[in-house]
Length: 373
Image (cartoon, rainbow, N blue to C red; front, top):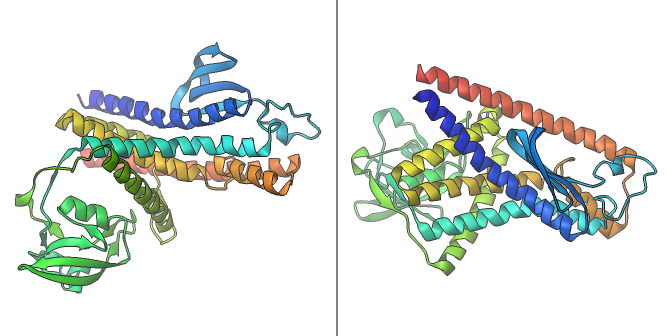
């Protein structure tokens, strides 16, 4: 039974992960077609081709390894060779501005998907279990950030900075991305409003912030997230997208604060498992909660992909966008030799990042296996 559950989790996760990849590559595809660039192949998955069908000049493929994908355009490697005549319907033969827009279209598709995912969640709503916002500070947490700042057991935390706190789930969500920061916390103590400045702690393994407080388990009940109409959902989706992007950048910044990079960077295996587990757990509650849980996690991963791909690192979309727009604005041209050297540096960086993610995934699953013994 355990093996079957694991297999189902992986299958669900792979399907959901490939939805994000498919939309990303579809963004490149449509913009390439709009710019008159020939798309030679479009693949879901990487490696050896399992199935393929040519349709309207593009070879549509399903490849062996079901993680990732690609949109192969005419002349992608031509620019690395000297004295090559570039066709106008090739990637490097088209106008630089079009090339930049093609590079931008993939990440933009992820941004649009995340926005609509958050919008659907805001309209659907969801149920979740959470304790109330009353905190407990047991003896063993007497030196915690909250205790040092003067908070007491029985205090109800109603605000963290400008974030309204209605239950312990809200409190956790507000604190986790704000480690090692001075936080303004509003407390209700015996019907009296008090304000404290608390310097949050940060877990060096994961980079997660903490106050050092516990919840009251007896107050844990099933709660209902607020549901919005169409226009309210649009506003909420915009806010959530903006907040998630800001928190993602903040998450990247924690990598330079002494945290263990192998704990904070997750590879495709861990992401796939997270997606599969979220899918199964959400639908075990009810259909609405299942859809909302999946969409929230997909939106988060999609926005991470949006940001990562726009980084100006060779072989990522951001590098193509940067160089193409520089060529369009300043009429400069990077030599084939320089482009090849830059591409090699980019490949080295991506391989390094992939190795870290792979090592992180192995450690994670070894830990899960040992904990299950």
